[in-house]
Image (cartoon, rainbow, N blue to C red; front, side, top):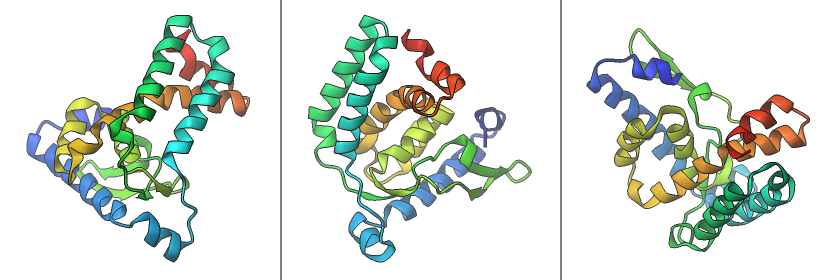
Length: 193
């Protein structure tokens, strides 16, 4: 379900129904605790705190030579505020999709209903806010707000959602660099040069 598909729906009620479907899926997925998923599914527990520290190190060591100085400062301050802030201190680890964005959400344009979720290759144990960052990135603030308001304690994770989204382009640039994908690198780095 691409952003253009969503913005093409003129009925606010249909858009709200789509939001409700997506959030219902995420509520069910995120109801599987990290402990239960580790025990029953034998999934390795990832530490989001450690992952963000590692991402910060990679960005500084690999990407900073390509990034202008003012953007370097903004990135460093953003990571520092986030990693030392309160929003990151009380998160619950659950089962997450890990790549919950427009390219992995299927919908039926005739019924304006979600028909499936695909690509669980990035699934694992992590911060539920990460899945909402995919919604924010794919569909923008208005639809994200609609979704986060339907999620139990959604406001409590909003700060983390926005931080994760702010790292997506840099993650794309890193992916491009590490996998010799010039197009991904350029796409991710372009706003930071």
